[in-house]
Length: 301
Image 1 (spheres, rainbow, N blue to C red):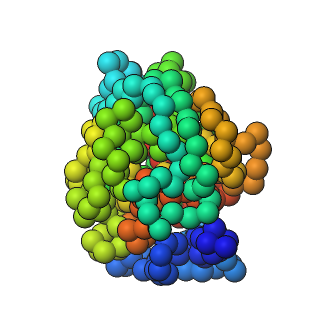
Image 2 (image 1 turned 60 degrees about the vertical axis):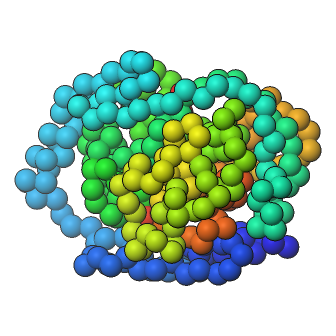
């Protein structure tokens, strides 16, 4: 029953947790997010205007601009913008609503089950607007700032970004699996069993409903977790590669999630959620076409 209410609240664009929290309108001069359809929260689509010659020229310039990209020793560089990847040594952990999550754990975090992962890289931070712009030539984010996390991107948008990044670098960047995400969030083999990513005190590690001021914040401006990863609790939700599905008690090795589905997994909570939604094991999902100003990504490799 708790899972049912969590799903309804998240589809409404609300932060689901132990209490209901409404999504506050950001304090910006442009039009804020509004409910434009039942059970959905998104920004109103701007009215289309005929492109001027200057706009057309700008688009052509973006299309033909030179992009220089490289990846070496855990550092991705695109047109002078750096993005660090952190090595996560593989291991076995208990995934789901483990003891430290207490009564906050929802039905969809159960049953707790054993997962074994191979080693991989994951982004030290959420993908920034600077990196997205360097790769894609545009910035879809509602809140603007090079060192802010990119947001207002769908799962499908992220796939376009990753494909373009891989064509530039010759690497195989991707979104993390849900299991990789949770293992890294918990601190991998260095985990100290915290409720949130890096601490039992959410103020130390996360931008969330009580401290964000209703907006995103520069990445890596809170304390990191045991692996040196930032903002895995709060700031923006992060897309994972998996289709959303129920857990089983069966032990798994390098799980990829269900073969198909209707929604993709999101993790971590965002700047308007209550603390309970920013826990390490909290999980939810959105349709892969969905976008809003609390939804971003983190790379894996």
